Length: 99
Image (tube, rainbow, N blue to C red; front, side, top):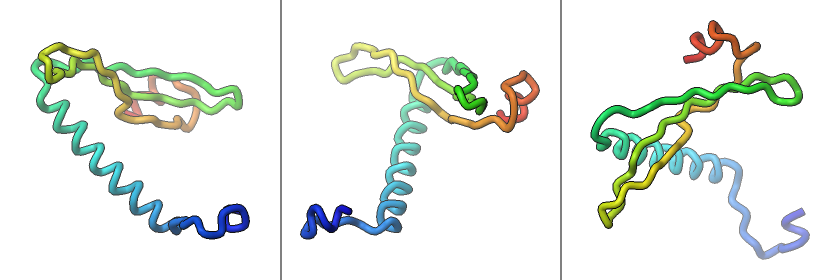
């Protein structure tokens, strides 16, 4: 469809897109790890679980910290460390096993 609508537009192959995504993931992961290591004090971790309308259970692991900006002011920052589909309900046992 893309070739019909814009025949001169370059479309990278799925292999190229996959390679670029892996590089971006690795770079982002390393940057986040470096930033979290630089945090003074403890990092609060939160776990959030829910069930989708089509009955799939999910769990996310979230970390929050105060990011120091260049002007010396702190900015409350939250990011997802992991996003997991649980094989069954989000009971304490299933959550512990997934962690």
